[in-house]
Length: 458
Image (cartoon, rainbow, N blue to C red; front, side):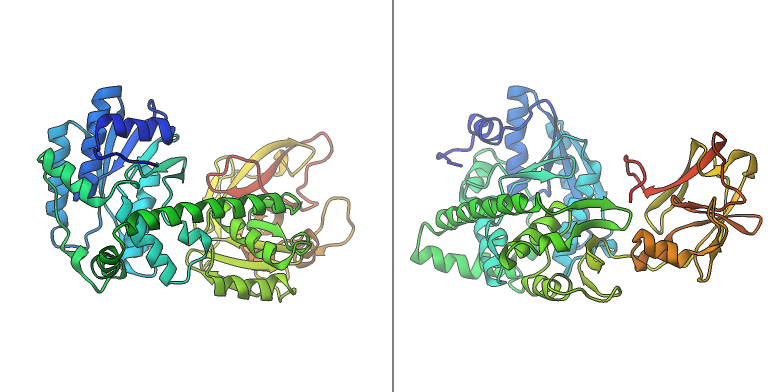
């Protein structure tokens, strides 16, 4: 991305419509903190709105971390009212976020809310500039990041059901300040940006000025390095995608899963590259290099026990048989019997699942033997049922083993009872006394992920 000496509507249009190929007829959401950078971006987009007719809106996240946060919100409301821009704002609860420090938790809460509020196919614009790129590259370098970390901030990426773009990445911050002063813009100053106890602030105020004194072009140079690293990261991702074409992957009730035995046909370094890519492609943060090394040694290079698990923020990996399972951390679950009038779907929010009844012919439980409501319970151990056409009862434990259901999920699959007898083990097995005969109207019970559009998963 190149830049001339000015930031004007024509240049912004060239970057956004020309280089970044944004859809001008989709909603555009500008992240607006009220600070200098986001104020410049919003003002530039305002000029572009009047030039090409954008559907422009602003988003303000109130983190509640600063004593002036309420005043900042009032400032943003006033600015957007003056500029006739719709502003959406929310006070965020950082207690529910899983970041390792308050800065990271605030970021995760902010971007999580952005994903929620944005319309499908829309665009999120943030005001990251050349200085932010340099700070991010150095911060990631000093924590020992790999190629993807050194690629720093991308100018365009997938974001939820839309995309995120940073049109100011090629612009130095002094140019943004000149723009703001020229247009007599008003903005707020966050005093926490001067706190040198925060690593990013220390790099900004204590490290980069020293570099710039010795190497005046350091910001452009680091931006160029980030571009090189991004090209390398894209190449590694392309190799991983190609490698994974020969490795079975699928979405299941138990999480994303990947065939470890097929993965093992690759060299070790390509296995690790493929795993990193799989984590990110599945919507999870990649683990650290140390965590990935432990994962490879304990779950890929050899088969672990069925209770082995590796966790990092918002993710965990387990292995069962030939499969590696990736999911969000499995929450604690205190099962209690439920009464379910089966004609309406039953949400199981503690499990992130939905139970529903689907009409069938000659399958499931016979409609004639179904009461209006069923009792939903969970395994306690020792349960048995007799399958249609079988003379003897079978233990659920054996059925679950034969079906390859991971051990850590077996106690989370609902059992359906009629008159204190097991009638169905959701989605898989039905008990002989209640099962529909050939040609008889029946009901099968499907267990699916909450919000899933597909049929019940394996």
